Length: 177
Picture 1: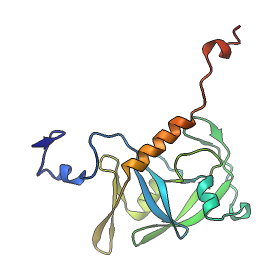
Picture 2: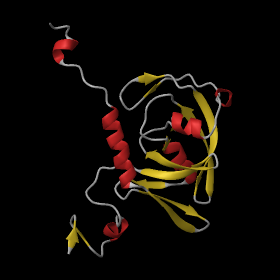
Picture 3: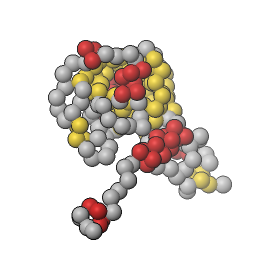
Picture 4: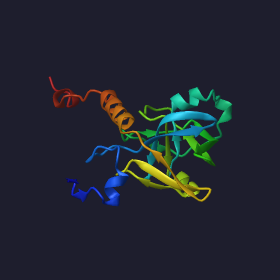
């Protein structure tokens, strides 16, 4: 018996046990941020910006004076440019490994609570796989892994689709009668 062209004994097949193939889900994991377990954290291999959104900011009981200035604009998911409210350094724990992360606080909609990016992956020596929805890293001479949640990734995608503003018709956008 084969699945997606891989024989059952193939190592690649064994790695994706628990994921429905094929899929195009984001890699969404739970991490310990600022001493709290935080769900809906997206691992973004293509970004350098570590971002937090209002739900995490409020959930951690942070105050405006906890933020330091960060004035560089960001382009968010919907293509809009936003000015961050500031930046804050928080400990992020994956298993027994902890690294300080400079999160950029963005007051904008996101289905995710936070996004960790390449600098976080590199600091922990993490290898991530969106195909297998896992991140792997070494800890005390062992290989540990965090497994992403396809169901939460799909909930986030559905929330994004539901949040899309209604498109204007071409007649009203052109000022038609």
